[in-house]
Image 1 (cartoon, rainbow, N blue to C red):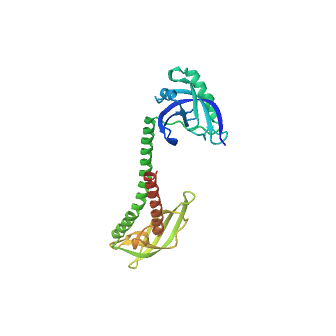
Image 2: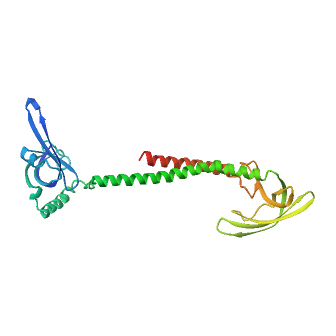
Image 3: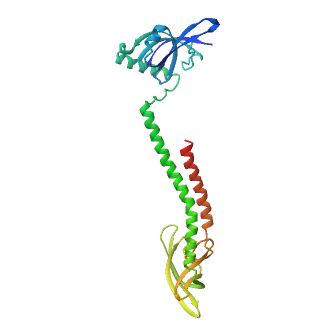
Length: 284
């Protein structure tokens, strides 16, 4: 059921158009005007030739007296464009007093807001271009950030492997022997870290050697039995060491041998960051 309601509405003209109707072989020229209401919604109405001629120039301010034919009873945002017609133009262009027009638009906004929340104002062409440029640069920044971090994490895997293998080559001529921790003490640095000072005794060719050093780890002590890496030409220069699964050699320090888990995590996070970066840039 359609309902006709008379209402005065103001706004700015967006466009005016004319077309020929051939309904039942009756040639009739139809005129329509589209204007932007106070709630930033476009409304298209039928007009006669005189009103059409007045409204040809876009961006002109206008206040119409309109018979609105609603498709849904009581909702002006659902109306019949062909049957909704301007009875007359109350004010137009320079004939409108600015205060009168502003007051009318305020009244229209309050009334139209009963039916739907006003739309945000459309940006000018310059504003749209600026927003596009800003969005473009923001997407590039996000793309470079996520893509760069992801690529860095993935590249860190072969770099870390290469570094460990270089370390193994550096100590290729060193020997390994079993040592005994004869003294150690620890100091808590923070919640998860301890500094451990230790003394290790080891034997090479029936001669005893002693090394004293310190390390930082998340345990408050080290095992009493430890391996020592020493120079064959100078056994006195011993280093606490452990076997590294990636380098396939003994390397200085307590290795922990968690590289494979670390590599898997880096690869997963790296691929995820790459995917996010590509999605932000190419599918925004």
